[in-house]
Length: 554
Image (cartoon, rainbow, N blue to C red; front, side, top):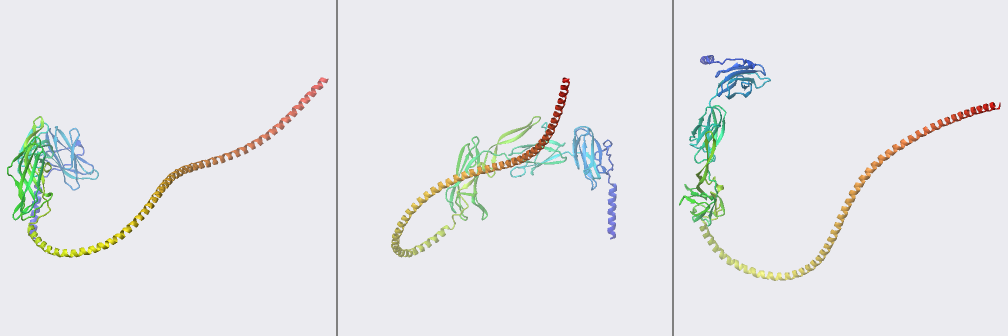
């Protein structure tokens, strides 16, 4: 126990001494005002603190044109998630990141970096910031075959500048199809890949990350694009141990270029591994290579012998039986030439391409073998079985004589049955005559039924017409009912208005009667007043006349 404690104390002492001797980056509380930004020096990290949510710290550094630096921010506390923004000398935003940002500076000046917490509402914590030169980029390219994905050795990879098309570097791929090219600066580049037997490819790639940049290049083989019409036919029945012939033909549809057959591969349906050897596969090389001129048909006969220890087949077309025509033909290979200061130029070169039947089956270089199928029809022991069957047939022939005697007896009895059948036949004739009479009567009934059907059809037609008319009348009645309903509602409204008018007339009449009564009363009073006034005027006139007459008499 004491030794363990001593060992632990020694370990703690070593760790403490190590921590004390390590260089500790200075801790600086950056200013929140960009005018008081802290100076960043290359390769010298600074510690910073976001002590208040929403606060930001500012840093500055000088950069010259065509220089490349990387700004990195490391979170020093669990609560910190730093976010920084890079500003240009005139205050424009050049970029932002949560951890690292490489940048190529195109002009000289003083650049600002603002560091803040990604959570502006609650975020606080500590971090460190570092300014360092950017590592030069490199590109690692893996070149492989587009069909089988196998790596391509000795492929030439060239890298050019995107503006002047100047060659920067070129390398050959290794056996694993890989090559690495070191570059001086990040940016955009033109890459071309060239390999024998393949069409060139090119592309523009952006190498924006410092250090290694991985790319892949898939090359397509230079392939023959012409067509052929091919066939393979077995005309005779295939039997075990028997010799036979496969008739093959190839029609070169190309009207300009020939094709050259290098060999012919035949796969028969009994293809497989038997007794230590592969059977059922034929490779024909006799007389090869054979050149087939343009627009020409070539034919040949391929002999074969079916094995005696496997089952042979015959039929229409076997799904596993085919013939491959391995060949070579002229093909246009596409390459690219990059001319400095000019650009990319495509070049087509006539070359000889290998034809792969399994990949170019649609062009006619693989054809099914007709005349052999998977249905077995012949057994190797068929002859022995036929001998056994012949012995059985002799036994059957002796039994057939007994059967013949039995059949004679049956024939006699059949004659008796025929006599009885003759009697039955005469009876059947009488029944048939009765049935004929019945059929005639049935015909009459059918004719009557036909006339009845015609009448019913006419009645039905008349009923249909009547129904149509009734439907029309019904529709008209519905229309009339709707109009009557509308008129009824209008009539009700009119009656209501007439009642109102009657009430108003009665009121008016009563009011007029009252007015007339009052008027007649006033007229009577006025008349009486007039009469009284007339009487008074007459009396005054009388008195006046009397007075005048009296004066005249004097």
